[in-house]
Amino acid sequence: MDIGISTACFYPEVLTEDTLKIIAGMGFTTIEVFLETASEYREDYCRRLREDIEKYNLRVYSVHSFAVQHEPFLFDKYGPRKKDAWDTFLRVTRAARILGAKHITFHGPSRKWFDNEASELMEISGEMDSLAETAALSGVSLAWENVYWCLSHDPALMQQVMEGVTSDNINFTLDLKQANRSRVPVERYLEIMEKRLVNVHINDYSPGSMCLLPGQGQVDFPRLYETLDRAGYRGPFIIEVYRNNFSGYDDLARARDFLLEAGAKGASP
Image (cartoon, rainbow, N blue to C red):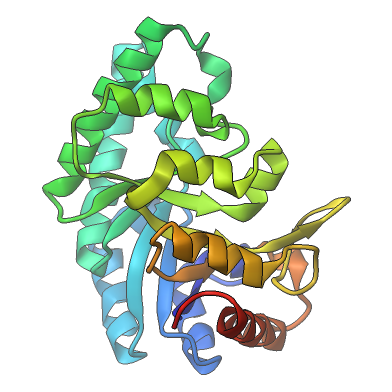
């Protein structure tokens, strides 16, 4: 079982490039790099970041951009704004290639901009195809994530979009806290994601606490692992929490150890 961590856990206290030494010092090897702002998509920045990634013997599994800056506008009706968003998306795909990532964690369209009519969903399918095929040119897949404030909060809408998709380069990221916020069982998302699930953002929650470190809430992790194992998931589990969800870095290492122990009780080795 591979338990990784997102650099986003340290935002905004630690710069992205400075998270790597901390992460390696805790014994993690697999990471998701969250590029926090447009200047971090620059190729020279990513090359320097890649040097440090190799220095600390880390493996970048996925890249996450600061999605609210551009992703919703990839589906915009206003041409110049959409073009600017595409320019940013291209920079993100190149950044992912430089960093050696396999996937780009992708939020997709905001739910408040659409009426969810069939014609609109078909347009989104076409846009998703274009984005996925563009990402393929950089050797990465589009890993569409379930997010509360996005169209992807609703599995039924995701299903309608996917029915119009033709690209094989669209995959999925499952986020536990976002599923909880949307009040949708993980099993329902898995019906849509199925064999295209390539990434899991793992965290915990309890009534009144949307996001907690694994082991501090009410998630039944052995059962979760069994569910994902039956679904055929064999990818990493990326710890993604907010900085206010832990006191010290040792808490993150303990959360990893908890997940490994829970995994021994649940999923197949």
